Length: 526
Image (cartoon, rainbow, N blue to C red; front, side):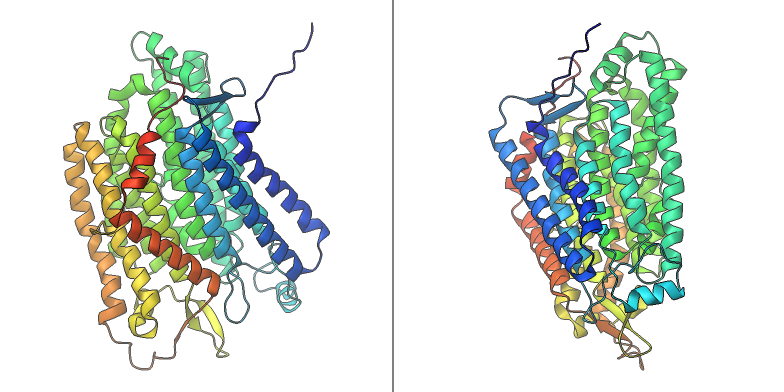
């Protein structure tokens, strides 16, 4: 029996190969460059170059793409305009997140612990901090996360999707545990995220096994054809599909699979929270869109009530719980749960308009999320020794920020208004597109609930704006807060603020790009 070597066309996967290859080399850099300061600089510049080159290659592929795209690795991967649109978005988020990772306070502190293997408060940790150790492994970990997410957007096989899921999930679990301050909280958040993520991954894999048992296929397209060929609705198939959806909805952070979100957002280093909040939702939504439209389409009626129920629960619970938060990171975490509901609104009716609306929504939401957490990283408590302390995350500490730093407060107000969907911001256009897609599919009751939820959510966004601009600093607290002026973090804030404004005022160009991407190379009936 002769073994036939499979032929794989690697060129269409160039952006992913560049990122994952750079991540692997980044691990070697950790081993061979021993001086922490030098290693940090090399890792940052090297990772930035890799992401920028990958972004350039992805754009070139988009321009040069002929026909529908390319099927790679025996139809297990598909490089089409839809996957390239998501990949470019993830690379942009990766570049912004990487710059935040490299940001420092005026005292020269990074957001990460000097040595992740030491116990919080131990002598070893103190010695590592005094000797200037740096957790530079976060740079290759970020590259692994971005590469895994990019792979997640173009996979067309259920088993291979699990591999991509674990590639980026494992990197995120580690990064969440590496906060420089409040390390016990950070490690607790990482443990919760890991355990719940492991359960969701197991449920997803069990669901894939059940789907395979019902259809004898793991390819998205072949599963769709298998479902069409099945007479009636087998419980085995429905249970498998439900578990697959659970695994993806966990990554989106939708109710009732959201319990990891507030703890992970609060405990993780703020740059990791920014990247994770933007990129994970985008990658999970990209995979969900491809699965729903190319594989599970025969179950439209069965899935519709699931999406409606989860969307309503996410919008309602996320909004209500965000209202009562006094910690800004937890408030933004529950806000992300509500936004998961808004994302799922687009699936009402499973219209073609949703395929174009969702990338724009995730782009607008991701930019505002990264910008908002970049601002959070710049507002800090004053330490007991008069130096820079931990981040000021209690809402009351933000009172009068508009007087201390008008630019920071103004940028934060812009991001909050975008979250709320106020006109002339990217969030308004994004919600309009998502709601329009739902209405086109007959989901106007869901849109009505979404509008009400948006109106209620505007309260806690505007509350923070009022605190920053219209509330005086409490007596005796004038010197309790320090406003950082980290150049890298300020760069991220300026870029994201400009993008939110431009997408809110002149969105047509980006909307046209995503409209062109609203098709899949491998269609179920093709």
